[in-house]
Image (tube, rainbow, N blue to C red):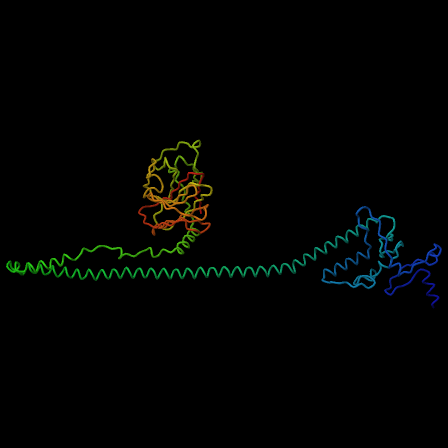
Length: 471
């Protein structure tokens, strides 16, 4: 039996434990060449010769190695951290496991054992086209597998994490909004309660003054009535002798009536509306009015009032200051300003609350506000100049300085920033005129008075242009 086994091994064939056949060179052939025949184990452990390459081209990968790489790639994508090898790649097919390491270098390999179609693994011939295509397909499979792993990771890990993060951020934002509105609501309620209490106190004060005045004048009226009745009685019931005898007493009572003063109307009897002025309420009211109330669609500039110093756009909303070379004679109109660069809107306002926005970006000289129609139009006197008479109220900006002008009085305004838009808010019934910066929500100036005639929006520009916005 031992002799038979030895003969079979010398003939060139053994079987390993896994059933894979590996061809070993014959000992006789090695002796004829003057060298010792290496064993199969030594051949498997020996260094393998690389295929000859042209330039930077990688050597072709044997089929068994390609299969092993695919198996390893699948294992890694499935989350396997380590791969154990036992005579090849664990998990690979039986015809692949351990086959690559047992193929002798420089020998012909059968189909499926490290070569393609019976070609030599490390011969001098160039790899065939199918062999190169198979290598390219293996690389493509690896790239697709990596891309699939990235997509799976994105869909299974990144997207759920992003969803949780979005929910957390939305919840936090929702909580912030609710907290801020609660704070605003509480502040508004407190301010409302405070103002109502102030109004109630002012009402009580005015009523108490009225009661005091009523009681005082009731006593005076009673005194005057008693003196008058006494005089009437003396005239009707006394004869001339008794009247002469009672003259002193009658005159004394008449003098007592002279000490009663004439009643005078006092402001102490009036309700003081200034008690309702609140910076917080004014700011919130102006913001809400400018945000929720758009300018009337009919609010445009009256072309007949535009000065020859100005040009007006086709939509009748933009006024541009013209240099001398571009000015042209205008058709005469009694409503046109001929010396100052002024213009008025077409629609007057005599009730309700109205707002409009004016874009002043780029202009360093302009005016805006309201005026009565009775404002003079011809000449260069102050009667035709906005803000220099009792008929107009305007906000002026010239060379970086801001002021509110009315009746020739100019109130300087110190602004923290230069607004690019200015909102005008008019509450005709309350006599409130307010200029507002919509970007910073800052009140530029507030004027409280009494208006006795319809008001026209008024504009003036002496540098570049200003635009009346639709909303």
